[in-house]
Image 1 (cartoon, each protein chain N blue to C red):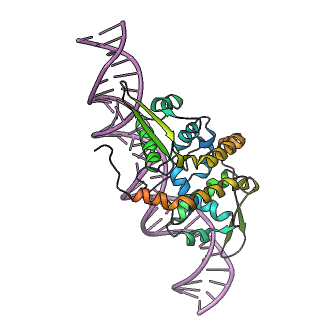
Image 2 (spheres, chains in turn blue, brown, cyan, orange):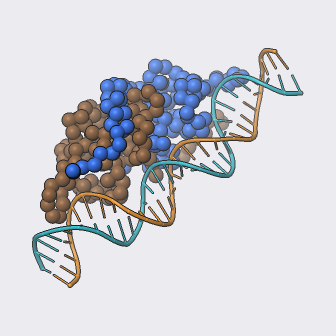
Image 3 (cartoon, each protein chain N blue to C red):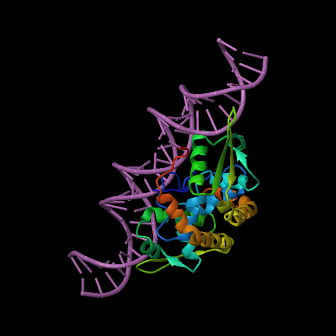
Amino acid sequence: MGNRRNKSCTTPSVEGCPVDTTLDVIGGKWKGIILYHLIDGPKRFNEFRRLYPGITQFMLTLQLRELERDGIVHREVYKQVPPKVEYSLTEFGRTLEPIILSMRDWGETYRDRIYDIRELPQQEEGG
Amino acid sequence: MGNRRNKSCTTPSVEGCPVDTTLDVIGGKWKGIILYHLIDGPKRFNEFRRLYPGITQFMLTLQLRELERDGIVHREVYKQVPPKVEYSLTEFGRTLEPIILSMRDWGETYRDRIYDIRELPQQEEGG
DNA sequence: TAATATAGTATTAAAAATCAAACTATTAGA
DNA sequence: TCTAATAGTTTGATTTTTAATACTATATTA
């Protein structure tokens, strides 16, 4: 359930809307949590999986690859067995930090309000 | 092409991630442009349609209704014929202003970079 | 030899989102 | 009477996204 713009979306954002451009980069289904956690420092593939068991390997790979393509995330492969791959924010990715942090703060502040609203059965007007 | 979390997404955001909560509210497919334009003041239904002919009535309605449900947008119906319905940010919606404006600025600054990256055929590593 | 760990890819199926077109109501105006 | 305008809703078809599962490689360890 739930989605965000994603994957094959190579046409970046609605014609000329800068807000949309930004959402195109950070709005993918799992990108919020990925960026949220990368702000604290590098993370490994399976760390994300452990943090959110709901995400499939396929989707995690997809989202990370898109962030990598957009220059937001760096993928560092260590030649070891078993393999070790570390994901981190690039310098460019760090330009998103203020936005991520604002979104984090807003979410923390209003989370309950949003949850409550959505639990409510849809009200009808009039009467 | 492209998507964002949407519609029937009544389960708000990935367990406990505040960034995700925020994206759940503002990340819908057309919410970026809706919010972007509402910051300048109220807009009518068909104004949005004229601004972005690509959006269908169905989707526009859907996105506006979700923003309304979440308390972000107010829907004012004027009893006229032909009808007039005006959409505006609520006071709660205005708490999103800093985020919207940051996203706008980021998008304006890096739009070309993102566009360029995505036009490029996927590069391979090594060689 | 078999199992374990990591970081994936590939394939197919299911679910969800989105589109496209037709249809609604109402009054003013030609 | 016919058309236009606004702000939608409804339906069915199509496209995209997401899930689920099985599969890959390789060194280490039991």
